[in-house]
Every structure is written in C-alpha cells, then in structure tokens.
Image (cartoon, rainbow, N blue to C red; front, side, top):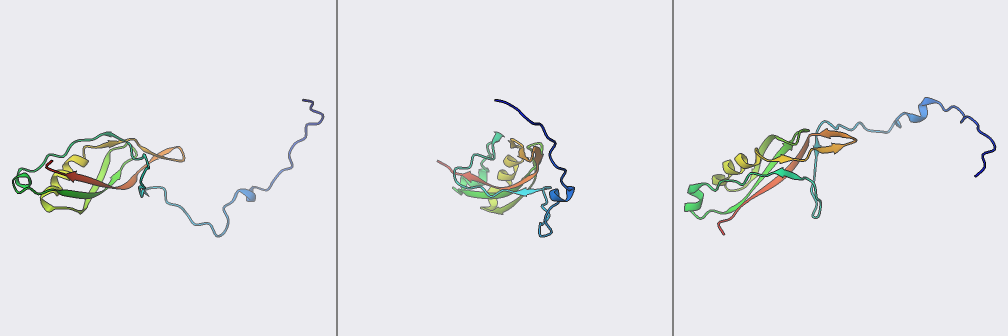
Length: 125
C-alpha cells in the first residue's frame, strides 16, 4: 500500500449534527419492555419461589397472577402492581417478586429502569 497525499478533511458546520426539526424527544428515564416469545431478557439472577397460601391450597385454588413491575437500574424490583389473578394468591405473588433480582437493563451503555409484566403461576401439581 502506498500513501501519496495526506489532506485535512474540510470543516463541517456543527449544525449537521443537530437533530432534525421533526425529531421527537425520547424519555429514557423508564422504559416499558414488551416481551416476545423467544426473547432472552429479562435475565432473572435470583428468583424466590412463591409460598402457596394455605387457604388457597385447602380450597384447591390455582391460577396465574399477573404483576407489572419496575426493575431499577440496579436490577432490583422497585415497584409492583397486580394486574390480574386470583385474589387469594396475589399477596404471595408480590412477596416472591419483590425478592427477585434481574440483570440490569442496559440502554446506550447505561443501566435504566424498565417496566415489565410478570406472570407468577400457582399450580398444585
């Protein structure tokens, strides 16, 4: 390889790096994640097993409790709310999920809080 000439690139106005006028701001303070089949994230690093309530066991109540949780930048559950599921199983599901620890969700090199929906399944089998 031969190099014949070295030249400086022409200067470019900084305006070329400005966002277009039609650009909309993006809030990265909290991201809502919609999981698809086959998606590996979120990685649960620690998962507490829910304790089956005795009253539910005695009544043979099974079901799935759906919980919306915010996972903080440190991978810990910051907040939760029940979306659906048998009332008798909800507290046990929340008690378990609040102990779970996830691999932090990284966006543009920084860990960010993310909102996900979790299903806690209770079966007697």
